[in-house]
Image (tube, helix red, strand yellow):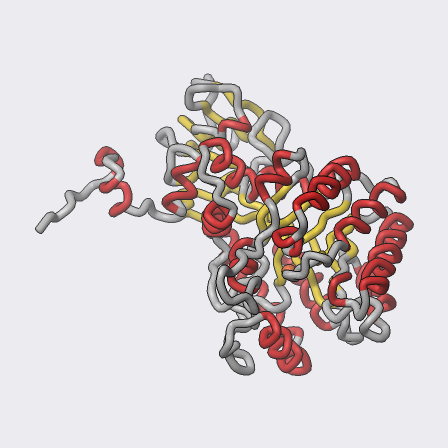
Length: 429
Ligand code: FE2
């Protein structure tokens, strides 16, 4: 074999083995997962009982804006509206080279943190399609170490922005993977519903997936998710459609939600919450009590809807923080959704791994014979500890090759009472 990872603990949802297992890898695929694998390999990694997870997956990101913090100025108020105004100021100044350079830098950060698949929206409202061409180039360049899936995103509204639908179709023709939309940003509820219909029909014709920014608002009457689910059913797009953000659901009437969730489940529409961004951007016009603004994550999960967490933004006009760490995203999601039960905490880990992978439709994702050999060795014994510590990524493996390593956090290990893994003593005053 090419590589064996010994003594790996697997996330509970991914393994029936109670004990640590060895993972055998050959020609970029996992070929064996069993305790005490009797084989040898060119390279061996001793995970020493640490958690080995399939890689993190970010199902919702904006790579055309990332790492532009401070360009041309910072967002002084930190609000969504000033962020949109800032993006408008920045767009005419964007160059393809700068876009590519920032995106590649972010992909380096992502890989170092075991984030090996990203679905990024890309704004198609600029008729030059500068950002589209830049991110398609980035997709080609990072393909050996990161799966980048692109969504044609009409940021200013596919009906509201002249020429946006044609631009979107041109972006798809160039190789963008998924049809996006932003119905709540159209001028009227009727226009929003019409945009959902035409974009879903176009996706059905083209055989594509759909992922719309949907109801990213505190308005409880923003109900485009209902139209999105109904169109998904009408057009037979089951399992290929996602509603992103869905923050209005936080403020919706409970009876209405009790009808909405079964419709979403029956149509197989998935949901993406973006906890870091929506806890900071929503509820901004509230006094007190202030709404959290994140969508109803545990309720959707209980209804059988696939829910994932996205990072959305890192150091851009809307969010000045972030580092590509999906454990930070899971940590925030867990807190905002009050998902502190043991099963709920495991579900938060799945929201940045398996659930997100299902939304992207990643082939061969998982830790089992036949899967692609992509994984991350975390300096933690289980998913809950990984979230709690935002654990170091000891090794990141892509197609059977180690692509990044990080040292263990020695101070954390000492405090965790795992002195066998550290070679220094704590100096106590
Ligand atoms: Fe977004």
